[in-house]
Length: 215
Image 1 (cartoon, rainbow, N blue to C red):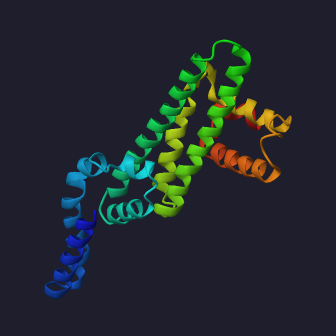
Image 2: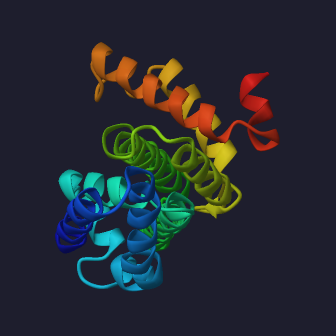
Image 3: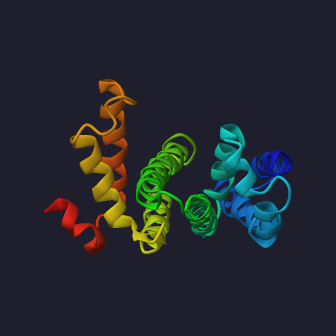
């Protein structure tokens, strides 16, 4: 991506020097399309691919990618679609991890399943918060990425985890906090932070599946 930046800068200088100013934006857009869109699969999938940049929290590289793709037609549409797939994959991974952990603890089933559900949802809202931070800090809070994030979590929340629906797990998690079930583990500031994350999560996936929470 650094090489793409350097190439675009060279083309910009050439355009300034030899062409009318009105041609510069179109020229850079065409060059950008040739460098980015036509090779987007390589950029998104090769090492380090988009998912690696997200997993490693490489804010500078993610910001650079956003800046480059924002300059070309349909660039952000392509990038946000890849972003959505990364979020879904991470959500599916959390579900599988919860299922695997629950299957290993079939003894004392009731207690362990409840604990697995609580831990699963903690990790789910942390995942949502992590990706929201990328949107705000790397992607200029662009609406395409907000839509991609909400779309991804709607897919995730239509799944089941530990033999329970995710809306039911959310309700149980919130009820548990109100009943003081986490009082030994969470300080008051931490509880407030957790509720802030829950509100951000619910504002993203607010649909018919969560109607019981709002009632």
